[in-house]
Length: 299
Image (cartoon, rainbow, N blue to C red):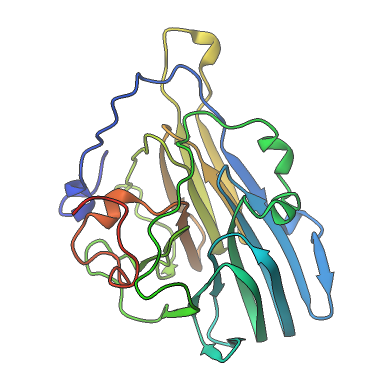
């Protein structure tokens, strides 16, 4: 991994993977919602979906009030209010402004009011939602090199609706705002102004999990490079994929990757992982709600 000097990501725990180096690789997924008709459209709300191996992202643009219901939901899912102009209620729990809402398994209805963007994160165990993804056909066969999904331990005190403020100050180094539940980890990074300094990129890789990068504002280049193997037939060309908001990019393991903001104005990208990342979770103080959700790793 190559991080800027002084970036604490350089101190992340080293991989303990013992599996042989892979010989075959899956491609990246780039879903630009602005190029697609909504999968669902109602009074004042339009929704698009994209997926990875383990997860589905539902992205909604709302002007008014909308309810998102689940019946017999098999596991926890996440609702992200991405704008301060939104408010939500789930049973007797309310939230307003930028908030991460964790909704327990079973039956639920999340009612959101206002004007802005609402994201829902569900595992692909919710097959009805997974089938709506614009890139669902890409996952007709399992993608390469991704570990089997295992949920993390149940929350302290049992399942219930939990809310987390996405306006709290992020970490100083790295400037992350990390929350997790049993099924997801969300890094709700702050927006940035203008292009990224091209002399301060951060190419890195993951051995056995996908990274989902959601562009909420602006324009990015996703730079992705796959390993060369002895069999040239399995080589993949480098990608330098331009995306504009709103979009979802799913970056496969073990590709080397980094994302470069190139828009002249506000650029905003957040990252999602399913299940939560063990390396981030191992860093003291990095996960803001670690007291609510035990780590899957031994202490």
